[in-house]
Image (cartoon, one colour):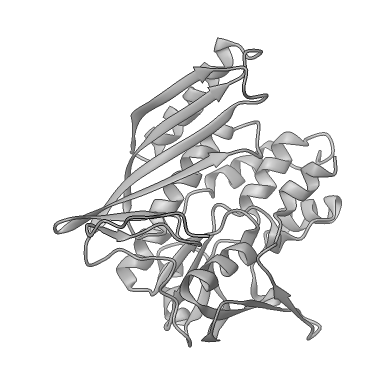
Length: 312
């Protein structure tokens, strides 16, 4: 149900299902804003928070310039934990060359675990920003990197005893893959119809949100979706589906020139693959499996990480 009662004319992209960013008219440029919390991770949560927020900005083809931080900490946690979280946030922001613009930190009895939420701010040329809702029938779907990167990292860090085959080098590699800023900027400059960073509910969740925002039906070919060998091993051990697993680090892109975009990104050192296409009007996602069977993906799709945590 839409609860937005008033639209300003200088807001170019309003709140809507599947749209993670607001876009505000600033003349020749636009200001892009997005807010995201971190709720499913403990170790490295500050680092993840920066990437999750800034990846939304990159999915609009905008360059992130800064973040504001909301940090709520339970009374049972020490000042050293607050300092550690902020060190993660400021360190990752520095690595992305963005500024921590301020925010709010509070110790409160109303939360049981730390709650981190970041609002990211970016800028783009008015003629160059991209939305989630721009998918057109006939577009190809391109996925950068691989499915399940963030989920693999969270599980490897928080369940190290069960996943003792994951090395420190493996975790470091996964951390290095979390940002989609490079591919977001490159794809926007190439010229694409729509982009969406792949987060909750993984590749299938991102496809559903793109389909809903664009009112175009999408088809995803399971066999075409890249999955890292490490992610495959983690998912086998924990009986998870990598296509439904939290996937910051991947970008889903709709373009009529999918093969050309893949070659363009690969020439820039970025892995990508065509994983499906858009066809027909109306929202809906069809997953085609290697055995020829098909599954209709609905709006109740659940992230495998949340399901796993709920069953612990």
